[in-house]
Image 1 (cartoon, rainbow, N blue to C red):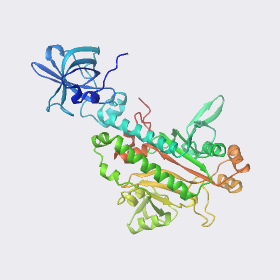
Image 2: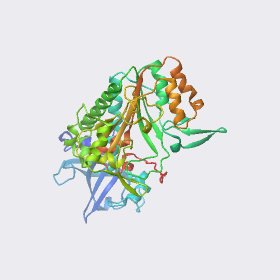
Image 3: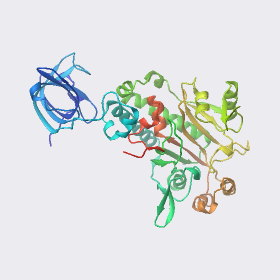
Image 4: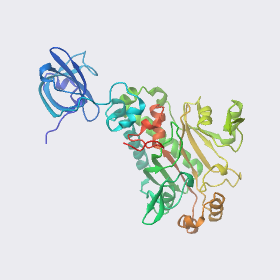
Length: 436
């Protein structure tokens, strides 16, 4: 099989004056009377300029797939590196129709409607590469630190994060749901495999139409036995710091293309500040933050959950992520362990990205006492019988344990400084979008 070099491979003095061959797509065309300048994009988003006599390239259209060979030469006028192929032979695999819908300036909705084609834009290619590096380095850190990768089912019988956001399915005559989280299954696996993690899709039937909500997202989840809350926080800050520093090194060009201030990211280092929940409320009160409720405005108070606006206010002056620790137990899911030394508080924490990007991880200790767990299920209107297998984990050899979940798209949104979370995933699913 012939090995074809990509654009960035041949941009080297090693190939100047030599005959080179490349395959790709017509990214841009500039026609002159005698010559036609073709910007070719390869299958990794690299580009290089090729020049042909106009009569030889007169048939070409944007996104036609072609094969070019010619002489590589150095020309400072050529885009992105000053290398250019003086074309000799031109082969067309597919002549694209001339009405290609993606131009240089298009509306957001048109780009979403044509996402299958908009993926070819250099911006989306850069986003896809950064995303791939995030998951790569997350895996690397977990593997190097002796965490075992596992998989959990996405067809389940019970809720993890509340029944109001479940997607119901028909399953051979009974009702089942798409998983909101792999957490309960990961908890089962710690008894036989120790520290475990998974990277799977999660589904939330939330009707939120915000810049940070998706109905399907990629969920990195981690669980371990014999840990304290502080152990879990250290894992999170070390993991996030490792991901960021390595992504900067591997994807500097892509982050620059996305106009991300990389200097800010280079300064991200563990440890991250820990802010007690009550201190967070005090800061918001001092800043005059108010909540809109039933058409009325009031000051935030202890017992209120943090939302998009309060998280933005709390973190607007931070450059590092911060943990908000010790939320009121009633704000958290049934599995969160209550602090026996400070009743009414959960042994949990959310990591908030700086400058208003909001929650990127949520985690803490899991309730390991069967009596307390059963009571919490009942308090939240859930039927303990539905969770009988989960309660078995407390009946037979329960241990202190905990973990966290991280939304890859939320981490992406902050890391790339992208406003809308829909642009952090290649094919977004929202309350109003299920195609393409």
